[in-house]
Amino acid sequence: MKQWYEELFQDYANKYDNESFTQGTIGEVDFIEKEISLDKSVKILDIGCGTGRHSLELARRGYNVTGIDLSESMIDKARSLALAENLKIDFRIKDARNFNFKESFNLAIMICEGAFPLMETDEMNYLILKNVCSSLKPGSKLIFTTLNGLYPLFHSVKDFVNSGTEQGKAGEDNFNLMTFRQYSIYETENDKGRKIILNCNERYYVPSEISWLVKSAGFRESEIFGCKLGAFSRNDKLTPEDFEMLVIATK
Image (cartoon, rainbow, N blue to C red; front, side, top):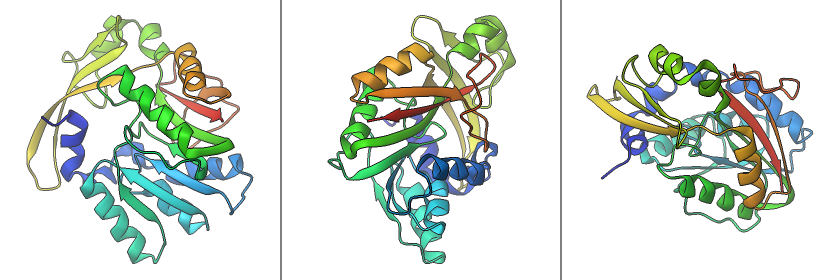
């Protein structure tokens, strides 16, 4: 049986590029470039790359990029977009829970919940971080975003549930305080015009958990910031008003 994220992204490549949360690519890549000091020799791994929006923009700016994603349709579109612009990007169909590039990269990115924290168990999310770490050279960075557990805590479970989210209707959400998992029903149409109803399950993390997970996965340090679409910045302190957090981990 396919998980909700597998079913959603099976035929969603065209609609995905029009989603509001995919519109901040330029500013996000500007930030990524600053983190690597505009060094064009850096080899970049884009995990959960989707249709390749970050990979494509990085390649346009002259970087060597490999993008991996679980969805065949997403990778197919990413390859088509790269071909249309004559960009050389190594797009591969890979499961983030099962890969190891053996210290081949200088930077990994995992933006907009690319793989982490969508997995159905905490162990799977942790395995993704382990795989990323093993694929990075010593001294390299991982830049990723994830759901901020302070947000539902601060707004109270009741207010959070009744407000609804982009991936669920009001009254149909269920945030579990014991597991920090958000269960929601998401209704949409795929690229083929077929209506799909998905039971989503996403993991929220508090900062202390992320710091511990990153260190346990093999990174020596991590920094956590607030996350604003298309405007990543080290100047943004994480607050309970941030729906996501931006994490920079160094191996």
